[in-house]
Length: 110
Length: 117
Image 1 (spheres, each protein chain N blue to C red):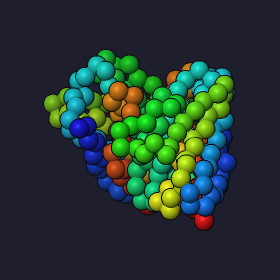
Image 2: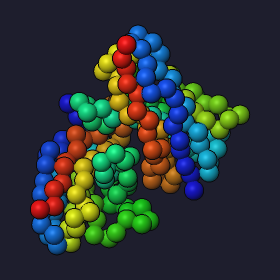
Image 3: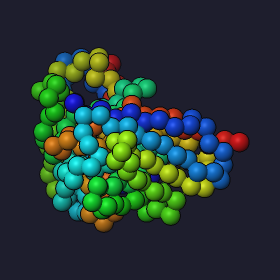
């Protein structure tokens, strides 16, 4: 049972915009930044977003992040087949004094 | 560019101690501005934070693992390590070492550990 809640699956067609959600609480997302990861099969998670809405260098601007209250979102515009992957959100939790994760959303590009 | 590389046995017997090492390049484990952490991923439980350690000694571990976990630094080798005692099949996972540079995570490629007799 993950501390952060993500829908297990999402889908979209090439060129479409999709939004992935992540829900937490006041002790994590409500008071800390959110990270988003993309994980392709057999590889380590790759950071797509940090500090809720900042993209590391090399991440396309098709990816954008936002946070409101105790929820966060990752939007992917101009969906491509290579975006098919597992997406995880994470945040610091003040009660745990550690990092917490969502269970991941499997994104399928139809 | 900071890079991390995990190493250690791929098979551990139940009740024994899992021991992994992370070799750091491009940064010093003696740096006071970086944390050194471990995260694992198992099919049944997704990504799970294990714990972190700063050079200052400031550390914290996941309460669910705290009684069995130790993270330590070896400054002479620029490495940090994970020890997890009394392992069971539930500890079978891919183990990643992780740090952060200017807020952006840096992950090792991960190492698979199976707990089995």
